[in-house]
Length: 159
Image 1 (spheres, helix red, strand yellow):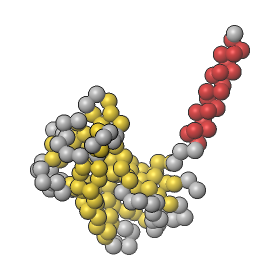
Image 2 (spheres, one colour; image 1 turned 45 degrees about the horizontal axis):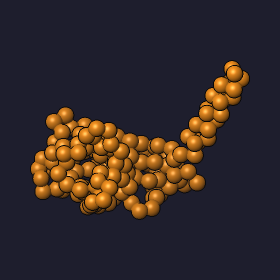
Image 3 (tube, helix red, strand yellow; image 1 turned 90 degrees about the horizontal axis):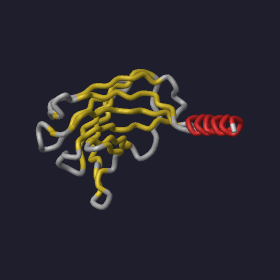
Image 4 (cartoon, rainbow, N blue to C red; image 1 turned 120 degrees about the vertical axis):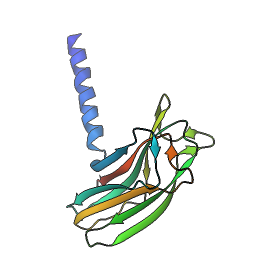
């Protein structure tokens, strides 16, 4: 009996190690928490990180945590990226948070939903140096209610 339990435990550990080894590696994630669950359009959140590996491709995600009482199925955000050579890339992005058939697209627990939404359709390559992301919303509702936190996540894609 004890031998079977030990073998089962070892198999579970091996499977867990295998699956975690196949996942993308997180390089960076930073979030801004809104204590009053309101995000004002004038509040521009800034996130900085350093790229050292220029051969790798990266996925960039918008991260959001919201209540199910959020009033919309989408969110419009303005993302400005300052690269190490001081060029600015400006993006106005419409991100879907819900689907008519499925409801909220994120992972939910009770009335709170978490989502990581890709910013670009395909992975990008960065130059070496410090990148600065400036994130704000451009929704008509101001402040935008039922938002608990937002942020940026950058993951290195495994070859």
